[in-house]
Image (cartoon, rainbow, N blue to C red):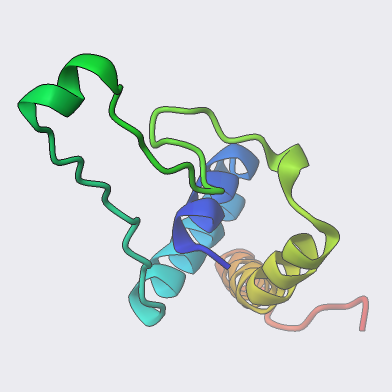
Amino acid sequence: MDPVLLQQFLGLVADGGAVAQAAHAASAATAATTTSAVSPVTASATSTAASATTPAKTSRTSTPPPGAPFDPHTLTDFQLDELTHKLIGRITRLVRTELRLDRERIGRLRDPRH
């Protein structure tokens, strides 16, 4: 999955607290471990005769321009599953650590529910 897409999605989902920290850690880890694709650059050579009659052609890519807002509804089921599998382990580990630290802070190292 595209790291930029993942980061935009995480920015929309994460709204505060441990979830924001988990999302930030996940996006930083994902950005550090994956290589980002370089978007194609189109160069249009203009000549004096061609520039007067023909407008410059640009190629359209499947990714939106950087200024366009991200719409999570455009993600496919496969992309959502991939995103879930990438994030669930990291978020679970961070939440468990947060709960353990809370138990240590209040003096109950054991969870009585288990």
